[in-house]
Amino acid sequence: MVGLVDGNNFFVSCERVVDPRLEGRPVAVLSNNDGCCVSRSNEFKALGIPMGTPYFQLRDREASGELVFRSSNYELYGDMSRRIVSILREEAVDVEQYSIDEAFISPPSFACEAGGDSLREYGVRLRSKILQWVGIPCGVGFAATKTLAKIANHIAKKRPEGVFAMPDDAAQVLANVPPEEVWGVGRRLAPKLRAARILTALQLRDADDPLLRSIGGVTLLRTAMELRGVQCHEERDYDAHPDSVTCSRSFGEPVTTREALMESIASFVAQAATKLRRHGLVASGCNVYAQMGGAYDGRWVERTVAFANPTDATNEIMRAIRREASDALFLKGERYRKSGVVFFGLESADAMRQGDLFELSAPVGASKLYKAVDAINARYGKHMVHAASEGIGDRPWKMKRAKLSKRATTNWNELITVR
Amino acid sequence: MAKKAQVAGSVVAGFPSPAEQYLEPPLDLNELLVKRPAATYFVRVSGDSMTGAGINDGDLLVVDRSFTPSSGDIVIAALDGEFTVKTLRVRGAGRRAGGSSGGQEDDGVWLEPANPQYPSIKVDRGHDMRVFGVVTAVIHRFRRG
Image (cartoon, rainbow over all chains, first blue to last red; front, top):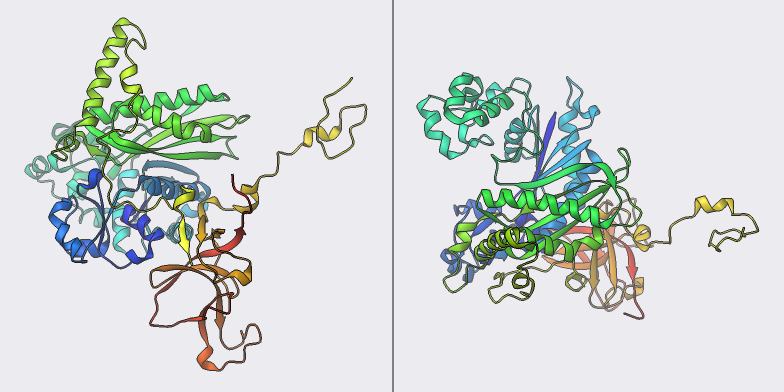
């Protein structure tokens, strides 16, 4: 049994926790450089403004007071995400963070008892705890596989109680889901599926294996098997899903030195950054975490690192992590079992390139530079070229975030003020 | 068999103290004040509406969202969109607090200051009030740095 927990309109919900004036209003959070809408409140959605609408098209509606906008406050979102994940770790047997606002969980056995309401009740209690402790409303979906849990989660969000457990016979549910909404299918396959007369997730589930393979390769076949209730996704198998980039692993032997811990994180960052580049994405920040202790007394440390500019360059990311998180992550005397990194604020590197007319395409430039540096160092020896990237501190093209709320949960100087 | 002196909470005689293996880590303020990190927030006080409760302008408050707020708790509340720190008071049948002798018009939810210069606020249908969390501690610093 798998559960998927994710925050509703996550960035907007975070903003509302620390600014109650935003409750009930049409609010949207903007992407990097205040470009376009990446999170919308229900009131904003109800006005018919789609995801990704550029801010400049809505400026006068903001001036009139109809709409409210905020810049992406990754420090805040990362902190709220950590709080939610720590609650999940207390309440579930296993937690796999998928992105900044989503995590897969393994419910405890008492919740999975057959023939009862126990899953739903567990989900309701979990959701209620997160809502009270962190102030973020979530959707909670349960099913036999991750792909089905994603669908269950989607249905849960439409229900007032916010929880949905997929029935054992999911046919009726799947008959109402278009195939391109199934996790991992995507819009590109839709015409091919339609041509093969696969018009619902149910038909996708029940289609012939050879047909599925011919339409979408082994990935599509695995998706269909997941719909059938057969678990196929491994922890590291997220290449088909570029909305999340994570990397983590348990260590063969416990790690006890700062160097070894940072090395492990560096290697995960390198792998995850490769994934970013392969999908043509840049990230705005990440959560880095490490687990210590034994199998039954696991404790975690976690930090959010927001990057000065969206990037896909491994060494920029590692520099930021070393600077901001290594002190917090490494505790002397602890034995570390696992570490990992989750990137968030993912955007297409192309979109960044087409940003503001007067801004230099720095993130992409840095990426090319990184590749060139790499090639030179590989040929002539390590650190042959390094000074250029080291000296850049406050960059003139720094990301514009004009409507940034306070880092109310991570900065002593920016706390909520109460009278 | 000279051994380096260690703080063990018991007298160190010639032999290594059997208490050594039970040495505890140093006292940690985080452990004392932040029982549920996921539900704990810090806020800054502005103004003097709660000086009678020992809460002063510029103080830091530790707020825990995991508690269900009860009458008598000092809470952070969002009142009509603004955060305020007040004592939550629920007045009603069977729950007359502090010797209140008011009539039924007094019944309901109140946000009470701890300073006579400020009024008590009755939270009625005209207000939008949400409790953010319960204040569990106040930190007043005499010296910074």
